[in-house]
Image (cartoon, rainbow, N blue to C red; front, side):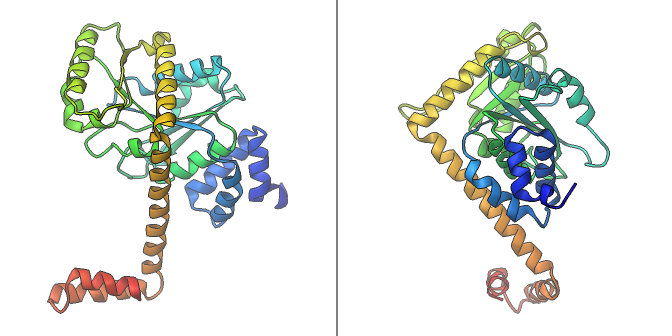
Length: 317
């Protein structure tokens, strides 16, 4: 293919026409830190801002991939274009969860209104990949109405999805001690919609009651969103429509209350900060930069300067 056909502007144009290969190429530029990344982001900017980003998180085994597939089915039934970013916890070279995700979502593989991409976390804590924010921009500009980000699994350090999504869905399941784990992991503070999946199992109603009880104890300002606690059997598609309805209700509330704008500004701030920090680290690691950092570190160790003064010196060099 010609160089012109692979230029950022042409890739964006083809992506907006729904060409899956072009969307994939753009996300590859993001993941690989391509030299063309600046041009790609500039080309995407005029078209971004229309998609609603839904984060889906929960402990391993609660049925995240199955729930994602069921949500995609319901969203497509409503004639919405859907993007899915499934974050893979394994090495980008080993395949990891990629095959499993593809099998569970195979029914959507040939649907031109659905784009599914697995991304490697590459050791990044927070349940998402470093490249996820910019991959979201690709899918947003490509015309997705809803983008689902499925995380690698929730934990005490894996709550970054709440800073990335417009609406965060937290999945739980009976028989896994999720009520207690939810409180320990802090996910009662990040969820906008709580879903007890595998609700056909014993204990589902108890998990729902426990969640509602814990959520009722939280102090909320007047007019704040009260997260619903829903039940689903994702493998059968049961309860999925109610989850999508709850996401829609949260989106409307967030738009009217100004919360959606605040979340998106915060997301952009985090993205800008990450890009700036990456640029600084690259500068410090360039020729001479690493030596300067080592010298300042030695001065801190031998007591000739303090770490704050050393940091100031590094930033002003």
